[in-house]
Image (cartoon, rainbow over all chains, first blue to last red; front, side):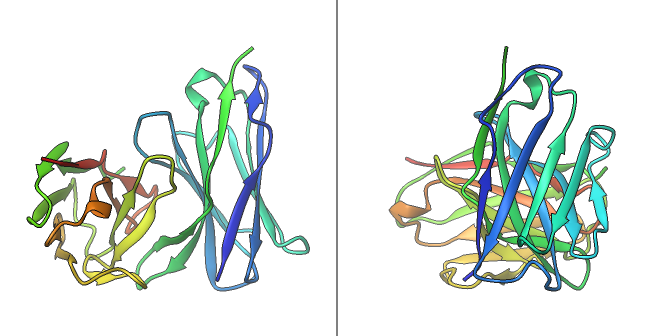
Length: 121
Length: 107
């Protein structure tokens, strides 16, 4: 069974860069799946950040596109999220997920446990 | 961006009863609609994809229906472990978008 585990700093300073990694186990990242990031501010709903395919092809949420980069490292079986110029509004639980490809689009069938990242000085 | 609107925001239901949750899309998403369940302190869990297909291991009391812009998640015979927040998500267009969630609480 596929498992995903997020890792990275739990505290980032304002205007800094948020960097997270999602390690994939129990399966290869080089499969016919997309790999995505979703975040959830404390007590609020879910926001899709973006996704990456093993080839490196990406799709991003336009609301974050100017600040976000998602990359994949097939040799380490992991993918990463970089979010620059962070503010307090970026404080959230960040989830990584595996997306199953459907007839149209893809949905998240496996999720990491999530990691809380706070933006504060 | 497609806006997903869920109703009601909170649903109070007694154990054993049926809960009916609604999700509306601002434009057609065909059947590219998923439902997730989230309990406090946990990651979302996939329940339904393709508007009506249950994910692996999901009990038959969870039923999804609808297409286009109107979708419904029906939970029959609510059990204690079903009290949670439920989100719909469209994946027909980018960016993928979620509804704001419906909290199913014990009446």
